[in-house]
Image (cartoon, rainbow over all chains, first blue to last red; front, top):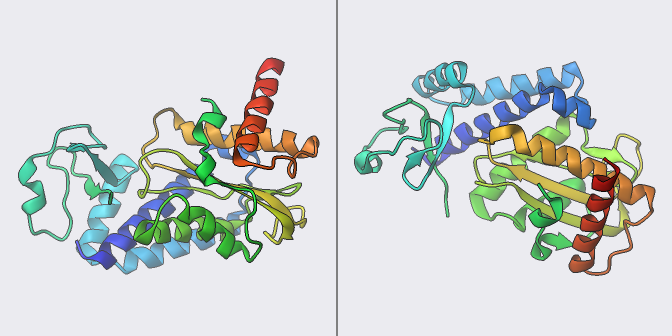
Length: 113
Length: 155
């Protein structure tokens, strides 16, 4: 995955988590209030970011988001942290734009140490 | 979960350089992560700030977000003796900042629970006028521990 695609995907994912958290009743209970028009601004930024991605990647992301809520799963100790299945070792050698989990299909992300 | 156990003295800066909101957030993030990961976190935090300040009033701000860049809940604390403009909801300056980054996968929603706990504790700190009291990171952790226990006893 190119650095710029990876950066856009990660930011998109983090913004989606922000939007999801804002909808949690607990978040409002704590006292963080977000006005509706501010939320719309964030949604617009989110969509701008989505347009910066190659269409096929944006489509995969949106499809996975609809299915799982979180489209990207980090990899920890060789496991997909979306479905907790062990990943085949040859996965990293594939020369695709994005690497997805062979079991659940989520986009995989290896954290930088 | 015990909040004091999530704090580390290396990430408590009681003499934070006063400056603009963005610079302060960056300084606190850099104590947790460096490089591209830090930039990603800063970018998400600033987008959150655009939606409405996390300056919750009474001199306290709690910038927060989830990020792929971390694999566990990370907290960084900054205190400044000089007033900091954070566009807080009460329009008053900020003196104490708790910055929280949580991983996206979070069973049991620990992130929001911790966020709620921090709000409760820091409100107590301001009520007792203790923001400027701790002189060292160790004293700060001790204070958080004490307040947390006091709150726990009331329940």
